[in-house]
Length: 288
Image (cartoon, rainbow, N blue to C red; front, side):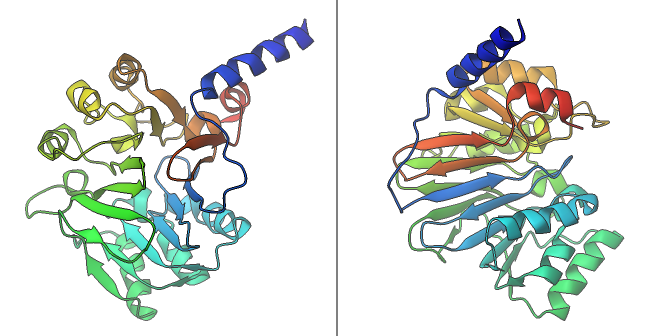
């Protein structure tokens, strides 16, 4: 019976992954890592030209795990670090990153947040004399030859941290990612005014909370794959049932760091494959 159960689980796992095909024999690969930092966000982009972009650093408790993950994936320097907003679950690990790696440039929201974590992060930026730019809504980051990054949402005076959160579209040839930070439904409405907005893969806003991921937004974007970053036993109830129902309604495959651990999406610009660290059963039994 145990053998039959294992075979059944493997068959289900293959079915879940079947829409994406393996990429072999192609050196023009971009890897996007959704790093399991618990209740928080951290995304590593390895560009086809060998550059490294780090978006957010998770909570302070994850800093050692994050630093080791980057070292395990041969990161020696970070060409661009983006802090989407100053909440502790997004910038908490960036102090350790700045201490452990050469960071060539930082893009920040430009919003002051009166916390010890934020002040420690800013202190490290100035101590290490890292060049800083402030994200501007509508700008395109022109630091890389093979990929495009467009800033879709950024800080306007009076917004709270989540509303102000940097959201961006990452494109490599025919494959598009939407990285939604912690933006909410009001910002999603504004983004839909952009006729060019599309995504094969979406990083769901605000860890799947009730504030984000409206059905009209998902229907317009029509993503094939959705990533949700959260800790299984978080106190916020993330992700809420409505978000999961909305994703099922648009037939998106759902992958979460709480269940699958670290998740890598590998693409050659035409095709992509989702590479989770854990199987669904492993993740449900061991995630915390």
